[in-house]
Length: 214
Image 1: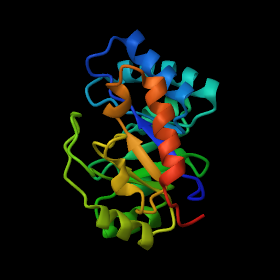
Image 2: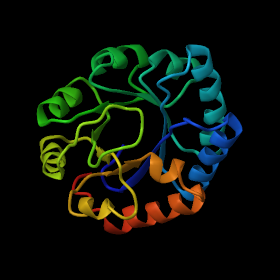
Image 3: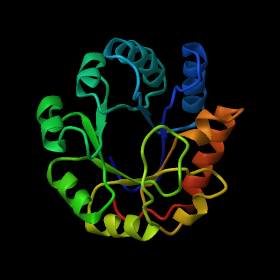
Image 4: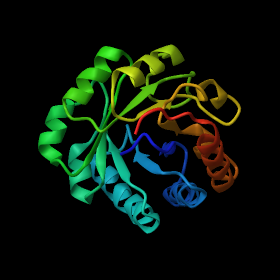
């Protein structure tokens, strides 16, 4: 993964959707230009998560977009996803790396410089930093200042993506952050036109983010 090109990272939330409607949003988001997809499911059983991951992977494979599985290394392995994202309460990055091997992508949540440095030292390929703004997802969030995001970018050499309540109307706070891109959930999941929203967000990210490292 490179910091040379800003990216739009799409994190899913199937709450309130039928499976068909959820997959349609994923399809439209991929068609609109998201560059990474993370399947995040906090409430599904292992079997439900696995079956949904299979369906989502069919879509991401069609578009050549990496699929990241949130939390569950077993699901990532079962569907041969491109990688996994682990939070501070999940298994350590180094254990995920041991289980998945060197070829897979491992992302880690980091809210402090210390957490970011540790994650990189243990083998993380990228960092998710936030929440920049309050969110409406089920994930418990704590606000992370843009200044902390900047400090994390300066202290590490792997991509850092801002996440948390971001959309087209507030993402301007990141334009001078030198993050590698941003991750969105509700901005696309709750859009009446996910394809158009993804397209607009991708254009704004590419036009305005000042990525500093490669």
